Length: 176
Image 1 (cartoon, helix red, strand yellow):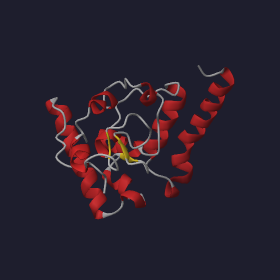
Image 2: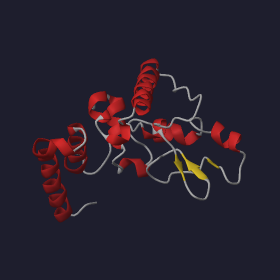
Image 3: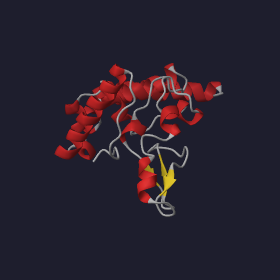
Image 4: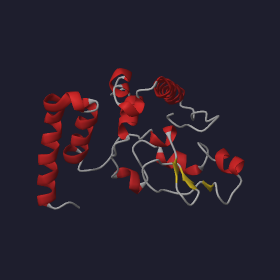
């Protein structure tokens, strides 16, 4: 539980984040990101309340060969590309039981409940809070390939949510 001092610091930082888009918009990412981060810090008490789409969009590969479904934090190894068969490991992408846990709304996995990262811009885009024009102004997402992949992800995940079916993972879902 945060102390009153840390809550005051979080509130002061959140207030500064809310001013940033107006004061420094030419060098910042989408305003929705800073507002969402500010809400996470002070209105939500550093607790995530909304679903995260990052496990649907990317993976994390460690130098040991371990592959995890969350591109931000260590959750669970779904396979190891150095010690296991690559085809068998990749077959777990999107299908491993951790995907169901990591993508629930509200977040159920403890590590997810207090997570907010720079990659949440992708979650905000997929959720509709950030436009394609806003996200592709950022160099990391500015290529035609990244733009196409982002639009594909948003369409696929929106259709899956609408149909209440799990997304179809025919291949690795990486941004680029």
